[in-house]
Image (cartoon, rainbow, N blue to C red; front, side, top):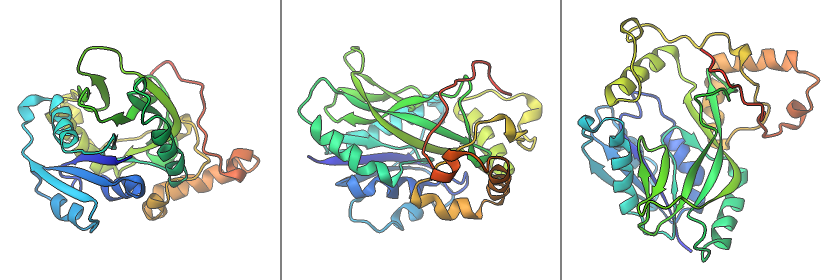
Length: 280
């Protein structure tokens, strides 16, 4: 069995994406890793090269903003086309996998290698927000997505590259991996979030009001979001320790929830009580 990792990257330094941590989190179970680097002006290409692994293969492309949000799936499919593995493991540049899940994921790929009824392995999501110890589960924040797909030329990235579909129009046949994707795109300094939202509008993801484009992003009161008591991927340790807002939040959490068994045992768990109304 051969496993290909793949991702896309553009201006990841400017927008503070943890792409090195993302790639390195699954590199141990990948035989190769394809990185499609877009036309960047912040040293993204050199950053990817700094990984220094012979598993990494870089391709370069120019992203056409006229394609709107679908430019991301188009670029993702260019990276997928270069994958030679039986399975293709896709992570976006702000998504990281926990080291404790690697053996399980590799075993699942081995077990289902010949099972043509499985097109993809589906992951649960932890969307961290404002702090590395708070996450979103309210409406508008998807909680499941496919990230490992059978590399057979039938499955392709679609839309804004958050998901996959079959080219023949049949439903994607998926199996739950019962593992988390740790999504860190919304744990950023306020000024970085302001820039990222402006960039998202330029691509076509969102539409901002006139006053929002230059307004400092505000996470609001984080106490309204569930607390994460578990461990994070080891690759993220330094970033988490250096994020002072998260460390202050963790101190408050430890005082308030000193009695919580999930905290004492560092259980990797999220509540299943989905909030139906979107929190603004």
